[in-house]
Image (tube, rainbow, N blue to C red):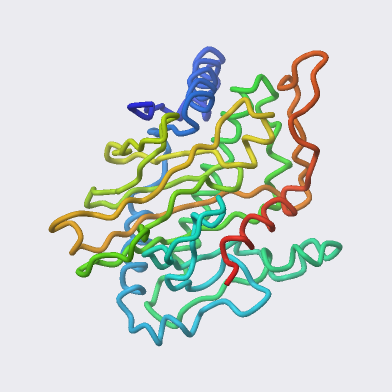
Length: 326
């Protein structure tokens, strides 16, 4: 666990069975050992990335009272602006000061509150997006990037299927009405020392099926992954790559075959603390009613599954609510 493997994802878009099988083997090894991988060959246009970065930074430079106008109302999750109130470590039962970061979030452009009417508790995840009045072009940039992330998440999930010896399209109908969230994650400059125990993002494991993270252009990501001995190792992806990690839901789905690893965003030191950072995170959550039960081939003959089946939305609702509590 001294290095996160770098994997070329492009074979998943091809037709070479040997290349696809080799990709699956590499993904399986990474997800078993560390739960993190770095992908190249993602095919996300650089112009799409640049546009979302530029407009996000313009938004975060606005006065706080203006940004606060698009805070999500009660009954809405993963939308609009979030000030530094979340405590990610709380998901592991650890109380800390608020994480030193803010977010601008969106979900599926189609979401209008009518999805999954039979599940009232699903409504907070399918509410319409909340957009700021400025900067001009932000909504278009965010929606274009979101579509690229949907495509990339689908391809990675197909890689997961190959890695698990399942049909390549196994997960397609389990993420076609997803409640994924895209967060522009802004880490302000830290001219003053943080509070005791306060990090840019407290130690946590992610909750859903997978996370797609684009590091800041400037470097100095601060992402650290926990080793089995409890120590942390820095993740420094090469340029034009994405950091991928599986979440708790995928660990449960694979009957503990794959690991959802604890990670954090460490505070910068020295001059780096005076520089803000922007990361782009896409968190793929399956369809609300997707049943998460031990996948075929993950339970040994004669053994029982490690977890009872659960709906993806019910599971995620509990996890996200715990972090946002208070």
